[in-house]
Length: 150
Picture 1 (cartoon, rainbow, N blue to C red):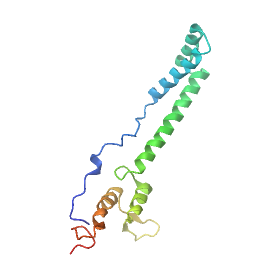
Picture 2 (spheres, rainbow, N blue to C red; picture 1 turned 60 degrees about the horizontal axis):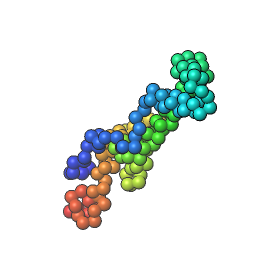
Picture 3 (cartoon, rainbow, N blue to C red; picture 1 turned 135 degrees about the vertical axis):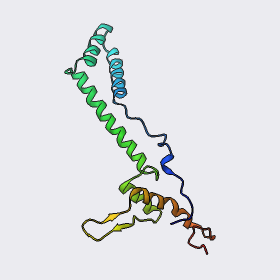
Picture 4 (cartoon, rainbow, N blue to C red; picture 1 turned 90 degrees about the vertical axis):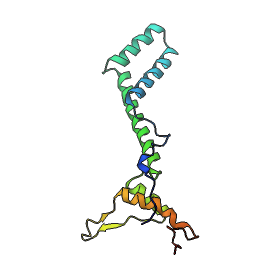
């Protein structure tokens, strides 16, 4: 390995583009949008009546569709969050970490291959540390961690 200490990537915060998952907030935004759309077509009393049904009656079609839409939106936001995490060394795991390693010419090491049907590879944390430190080997000037060091 290297004689240098790797920076602790687990101490980094999530990327700022990660959106918190909050079903209640998404649902509330959907109700606000529904109310705005209804207000453009109907009078105040009819909007209030329809919104009371949408907010308070679980069997109402408006409530059901709003909840279903909010659940789907939450799912999509989670997919986007996971996609963002998958491209950062600090937060990637599994196959995504293998791809980051391959971009730096680092492959996951085999820990135990005695059973060809159940090959055990190094953990994500160990592999992540090796990927992080491989940059030292790129120096052509004989730095301590480089391939050209004495």
